Amino acid sequence: MYDNVDMSMYKNECPRTDFLELVPQFLTRVSNTGESQYGGYCNGFLDSLKVSVSDSRVKISGSSLCKFYLGDNFKTMTRGDTEKAIQSISDRLHLPFGKANVTRIDFAQNLIMKYPESVYYPYLGESQYYRRLEQDNGLYYNNNKRQLLFYGKEHEQRVKREPIPELYKGQNVLRYELRFKKRIGSQLHQPAVTAGLLSDSLFYRGLKERWWDEYKAIQKVNIKLSNMKPTGSKKQFASDLALLAVLELGQAKVMGVIKEWRVKGEIDKKQAYELRNFVKGLSYNNPEEGNELIRELDQKVKEVHLA
Image 1 (spheres, rainbow, N blue to C red):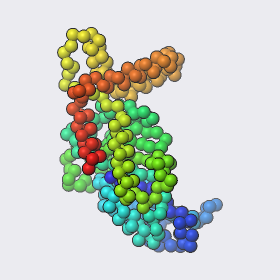
Image 2: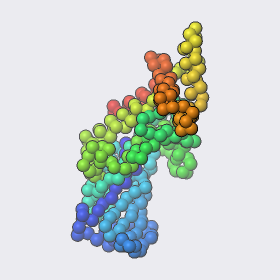
Image 3: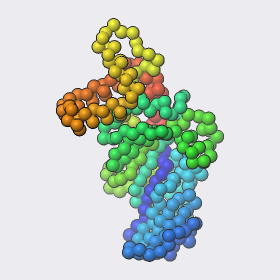
Image 4: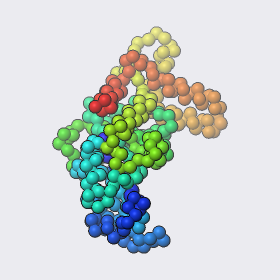
């Protein structure tokens, strides 16, 4: 389930090694060779991996470990794949990269869905501690440490003009991805996260649990897709209409309007809180029946979590 992994090997891990003398000879497309106020530096590639080298650090970032080892970034990597990939980097750069400090982890899986990916986005609502942002080909949940993404993987490959594996051709492939971008150790309750730790069974299982927990924390809009149930209750009818309006406009846009009213001083803090809770509460209408799209997505994510 790993994809991108950024990592850095520092001088204190290899005090007797001259990085600038050793590493560039194993790279291709070496460029930007020179000196700065911090010493010498250069950039290059180990196959598809971007490698930056200085006197004090060898850094791999901004490229897919999966593409490096498996040949494309459509797939994701198991613990075993990851262990072999790190060993391959170590062997080819002649450095113990298992000791490298990990500064970013993308943990993801492809889900083959019944409908096109974008159909599912309106039914994934707000999530605490994240800012929800819907884009043309994806749904993003952002904060300053992490990011959750839902996007069409096949569409991404076509845009990048990269090949689509035979297994996924003509499929509705929804990618759900959790990215740890800062302070990874504190987020994952580890004193340090090294490249060697990525293949540890307990660490890997913990990432799977976190991937699952972050999904569960997203509010789901639960309503039948076809139409409302007949009701003689004016209160229920009004609630159903309100939910349909939220679905049409998007929960994020409705929340944005409430926030705007609060910022302008047109409603007070208590009123804004009550309105937000009202909108969130609409998501739980008919929870015993739910929404066929959310039920399908829940099941797909759960299957990956239990695998």
